[in-house]
Length: 161
Image (cartoon, rainbow, N blue to C red; front, side, top):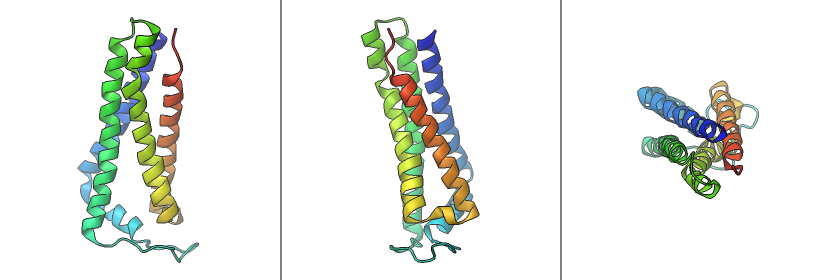
C-alpha cells in the first residue's frame, strides 16, 4: 500500500507541475507581462539599486519564459513517467522498486531547480522580486512548490522493504 501511495504522490506532483505550466501557456501574455515587470526591476523601493542590470529586451524575456516553461513541463512529464514506473514496479523486489524511483526523484529535483533555483535564486535574489506585490506572490508560491517537491523527494526516496 505504501508503494502505491508513493506512486500516487508522484502523480500528484506531475499534475501540479503540468497544471502550472499549462496555465502559464494559457495566459502567455500575462506571463510575459509579469516576467517583464520582474526582470525589469520595476517599483523597487526597499533595495532600489540592483548590482546587475535589469532585463528589458523582449527576446531575453521570452528566453527566460521558455526556461521556466521547460522546467515546469519537464518536471511534470518526468514525474508522470516516474509515477508510472513506480506503479508498474509496486509488486517487485525492494531493489527493483527503489530503481523504479529514479525518474520520480529526478522530477522532484528538476522542479526544485525550477522553483527554488530559477524563481527564488535568480528571481528573488538577483531581480529582488520580493519587493513588489506581484513578485512576492510568485516568490512565495515558488517556495511552497519547491518545499513540497523536497518533501515528496524525501518521502519517495525512503527505502521500501
